[in-house]
Amino acid sequence: MGKHTQCVHSGSMADRVTRGLNTPIFTSSSFEYLDVPENVYPRYFNTPNQKAVSEKLRALENTESGMLFSSGMAAISTVIFALASSGDHVVMQRDIYGGTHHFATAEFERFGIEFAFVGNAAQEFEKAIRENTRLVYIETPSNPLLRITDIAAVAKLAKSRGILTAIDNTFASPINQNPHDLGIDIVIHSGTKYLGGHSDLCCGAVLTSQAIMDRITASAVNFGGSLNAVTCYLLERSLKTLGIRVETQNRNALALARHLQDHPRVTTVYYPGLETHPGFDIARRQMRGFGGMLSFELDEKQIQPDRFARKLQLITPALSLGGVETIICAPALTSHVKVSAEDRREMGISDGLFRLSVGIEDVDDLVADVDRALE
Ligand SMILES: Cc1ncc(COP(=O)(O)O)c(C=O)c1O
Image 1: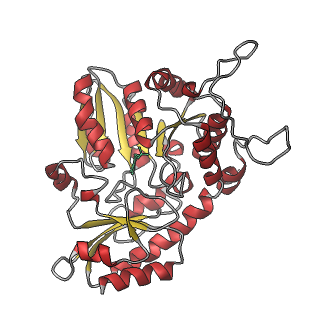
Image 2: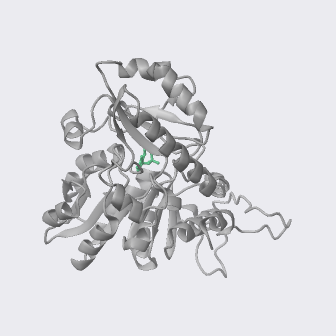
């Protein structure tokens, strides 16, 4: 099935009692255990609503198995702690979501997990791999600089050494990019972003093979970051329009990126769909669309970043991303505030950097709002 058909139909559980079209919300946290094939319980990740949405996402990412979590970080931390133990080594891309970066620097050492941050060229991963490396972790396009990592090259390299690979596919969404098809073992999403899409829920997802999922599940039931039935239902409802939302966001972001690139008060635009982006050729190869996220820097000699943000009328300065409404943030004050100033400098995140999460509004209104504030 095509992506839009999967969005609408995969995993849906018709209501056999009333013959309603939608998956009912099953609120029980207690299920009978006699004469059933497995014990069902929310923290075992196997309730009907959890299964319905996991199946839709599994289909969209073309993996054997899917699992939902209560946040993106619950998904990321569970995957890493399930697959890496004391004495193991993890190679991580340096330019990633600030929360994931902070998770590594704040938690790994306490649990005896060694790690290295590397640039996003495949050779950098190769150089960092050691005898005890168990996992290679990437994010592309990355948060917030939209750097592009060659997914197939990293997957091939890790596979040749018998090392598992995981990717944060949040920025691309399964509409624009399917990393498992390119050889990545584990695909992770902060579902709080594009999958939810309406800035009103928090969840995460992991999509992988059944064998790897069995290993992750063994730890996940202990860590307990499962998702409740009502949020599962909201997510299922949102996913039905994921394809049309993301395609509109792709179009709007490309138009805004081109517009900003030509503006005299903007010095740099980071968007993988611009021919001038260093990752453009790789992005074109591995993505179907370039996504709804872009970043840019203003010419601070001409315009104060804070004043610009306050002059916007339609676009709201706000945390998070991936919703239907266009929002803007300064990563140094939001998504990467927990990353030290020195690490931010090393990552290339300036204090004046803005990140736009482009929504589904009429693009002319977005352009007009940006132009008015720049003026
Ligand atoms: C790329 C990326 N991955 C993961 C996360 C963490 O997700 P959550 O906030 O749902 O835990 C975020 C949150 O901003 C993100 O931007």
